[in-house]
Amino acid sequence: MVKIMIYSDRLKYLCERNGITHITLVKYLEISKGRFSNYINEREIMPLKYLNALCNYFNVSLDYIFKFTETSHYLQQKKEIDKIETGKRLKEFRKENKITQVRLASELNTVHPVIANYEKGKFLIATPFLYTICKKYNISADYLLGKTNNPKYFNK
Image (tube, rainbow, N blue to C red):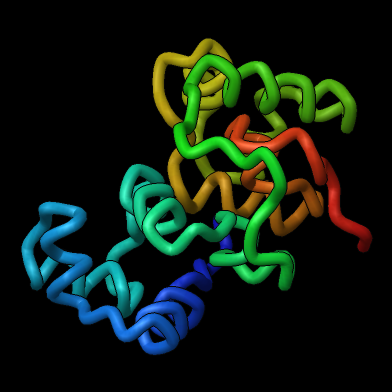
């Protein structure tokens, strides 16, 4: 089952710490103020495309935004998300943990063709699915997305 997201606290903190207004980020992301307000207050889940853009803007990792770590940035961290690499790493993660597509889909409250399409690189994994997998299995979101090679897993 998909868990509740937690990213707004860190984003609000980064804005405050860096003196960045929400208007600045609205312009940077090229979205409406209302949409940004819904995302920043978690009334709507922010798509990975925008979360990644904000991570790049603030030079922080997704793991930091999701509160999986206090390490704000990884060495040799890539800026872009590669759907093909993400798919490969998702499949590798599943195999390492002996999780079938059907089981993972059930845990995420979706159907297994969705997982298959992620693994084929057809679609970028949905933010809540990424968060849930990473939270439950202590795996780095940045690793799964191909943004870093280390860390792969966090200590439990």
